[in-house]
Image (cartoon, rainbow over all chains, first blue to last red; front, side, top):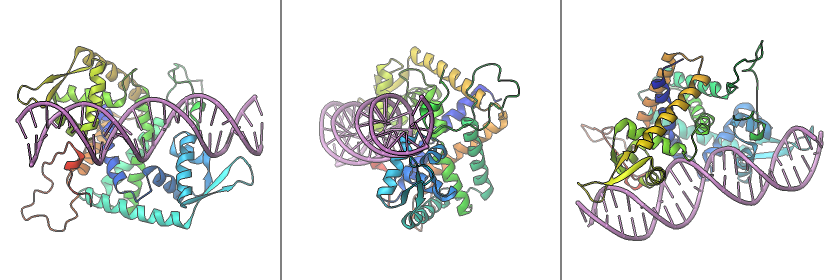
Length: 172
Length: 172
DNA sequence: TATTGTTATACTCTATAACTATA
DNA sequence: TATAGTTATAGAGTATAACAATA
């Protein structure tokens, strides 16, 4: 539990991160907006998966995911094959072109960070990543219930995943 | 200087921050998008100023700043008075309504963070803010010069402020 | 001629809602 | 009836370019 001033400061820092994100956006290769890059990155990290799983990892609505994926498919970076187990679903998989683009992306981001963060130690970069990871976790946890008494043995902050905005618990 | 893997991880964490920012966006009062909130916050923190200075603090193009300000002026949260020293400029100043909205905003963000980050210590929140501040600094520094030899006594990373995209040093 | 600020246009990311196909 | 995914539409944030007024 921190003081109000600290929360205000954190909010300011977070909303001011736009410049950093635009810095990342500027180094994207042609035809590849950040959205595509993130999709490819998740497929690289987690392997092939279905749309719904990807939407979950992206933490955006599935309609958004669908568009990002369509963009990448049109450019040959990934393919959608039918899921034999469920004909409604499609399996997403990186193509060789997708892997190639990922290599290019890694090279560019590394070059940029190496330049911008040349006075950051290995450890400091790691600490920032870790804190951001934790921050994301704290926000996606279901700490939204402003109901006073969480059911007895409460696992209130347990697993909960939504791939669609409608599935979210009521906002107020 | 960190390893490539760490840079990739940092890039991932940064691009995945959307969910957190949307969390903040959701608690905004009616008619008040995050853009307005940030503008008001900067005026509260730094006092009255001109458009160009605000654009600099926001780190966005002045055309964007102009729209955010117009939105806030239309709703009575701030006023634009002519600058006696330069008839091209306008001085921005918070109105009482603007101050009132800022109070409301502070209350809402505090409530949200207190709920979401209830297991973060005061110190941890402070550390994250500090690292984000430093990150922003590292990115706005003019470390973009990929020209090999910075002029002798180089103050290459010195003061540099742009309020307009056109004013930026060539991108490649 | 350069600078301050505004406006018009376009692009990216996102959500909501309506729809199709399958379970 | 519910779920997986797509598409159409709209809103927020941003940049670029053209413009007006002033320096």
